[in-house]
Image 1: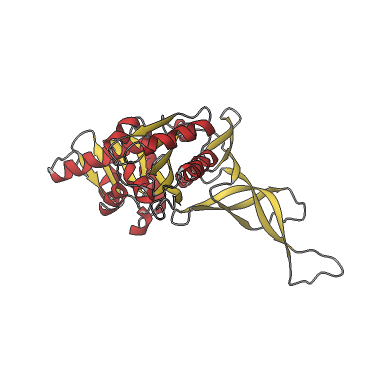
Image 2: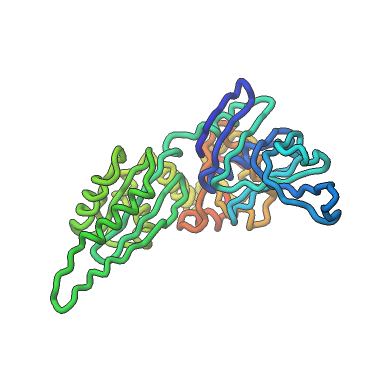
Length: 351
């Protein structure tokens, strides 16, 4: 999430949504009675001599909504905010009735609150590691995979095949292939990223050197012990101990540790763990939750959206940590199997 301006004293924050995790943050942040300012579209009926009474013109407009309802659809990465229009940039837009705004990664908005709570401020100012992103490269002479890891979400951005099979004993130069991989990394990388290159043998060093020539002011590291390449290599890299040692301060590694410890406690009949919303909710209200992981497909289990948001907010309000797991990844699937939510407890708690 890019915070363009944040002034709790004046009650507003202007930001740009970057990822699916940002949508979860906004879902926890936006409340009934807040004012949301965003670009939208609205059908306007023109009352002139040549206009048809049953037709309208769809116009782009900046609207200010007094929020009434908020719904998150994490499966298609969007939030729908419904409310009453209190201000619009087009005078022809009526303020009667309600209007909905759909927010997704790439959208910019301004949120106004009567007062910003300590939790609201923590959500806007993320913890350590949350703003850092990794660009991952898993490559050998045959193929390369390039991905991004932001928070707990991994995305494979590109795969490149080298075509270095050799014909009739001729040794082809890998330079064009290496240059293409390095150029793609340079296009994807932004300030604040860390680039990590993995792969068998010394080939990864050649790629690292080319990336270093193209990407300035971005740390570049190589990791050992990973033979997978391409998209599978990118996905496998986050499970490699060499990468986890390098990224030990990241949200991803922290969350993997929480999930692994939860599985260990469940398997060992340790009472300082809870899973399913029915059990985690009362523990959160009592202040017993030390860390909680929720899967981004939690609503697929038919859970109430407001209740889930309330539990996550209760955990953080009482000093616990909240993590969002990507359900497509191995540890995310583990969380999904526990009802979409699992928590480490400070002490044994029985509802």
